[in-house]
Image (cartoon, rainbow, N blue to C red; front, side, top):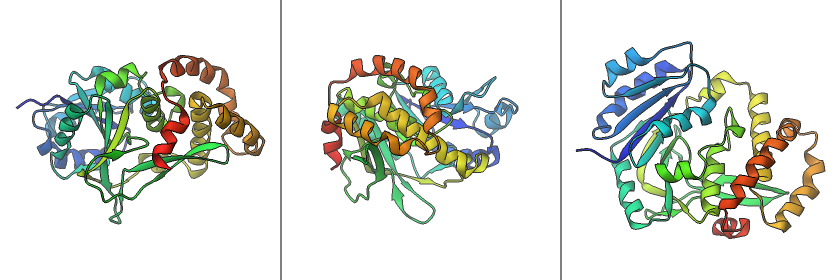
Length: 294
């Protein structure tokens, strides 16, 4: 039986872990299109992947695209109506991700559904909130024990399913955030402000082993600098409520010496150019979205 789902697995190095989990996950792939996106040009992984799951479409990038570019290429390559993004360190427990198809049928405004992720210590994550504090939109995890769909500030790029056409129409993941962080938050926020919905469900559970590629190949200082740089990019690109913009500007002097500030400032012309296109899609205010999670 064929399903309208393309499973996209982005891979960057760490192939031993990826092969191990692909071997476990493959039994739940039946009927889905499976696309593996290899973003490490020095290693061709086609032969090994095909040996594990022959039906896989394997794309070995000729140059490194970063997480956003790699995922976007996979989404554009996909042929099905929905794309299930799954990190290479995620283990499926079953094929319950297909339940999400019913959610989309019931609500035409639904853009994405994030799945619950069981971490190594047993903590369940995947439900997220957003809030404005100290001049910035921030985010944090929410604990949830509700089994029906709940509003989700963003669908995490490593274990969520999206409407493919809308993913493209919203402008895909933004390469401004390369090499990592905030790109999935940005996409979900654009969907919210364009009048669509992002949800979370406990009905679908995956195991997220967090054998982090980022932590393995980038040092902590670089990670923190990139995270703050991208948080600033997010504000400058998406904030439209005048009172929040004023609060942000008043707080800017505090951020000048924070690692990542100047890296964001250098990108400001490109950010503003992108913002001009982005805000044309917005029909809701920042407050309308943030009030959902207050």
